[in-house]
Length: 82
Image (cartoon, rainbow, N blue to C red):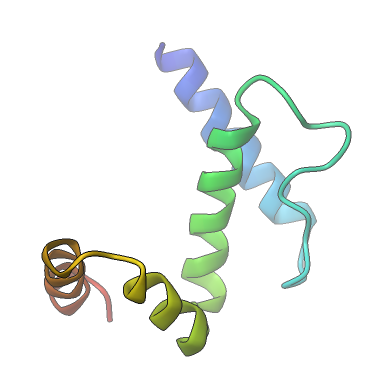
């Protein structure tokens, strides 16, 4: 299990290091299958940390949450996200 986790993290960092554009494909024809969904999530998190999330996309995501989850998310953002 630990080997799979480390492999996904290392693979995601490798993908991020080799793609320096906001328009990078998370799912390429040669990376579908296996843990590609996990690696896409990790790579997306790295991209968000680097670029941030545009306000319209952030608002769209918040609008899709029910009031309870939205409140939890906003408290988390207030406490942990600069």
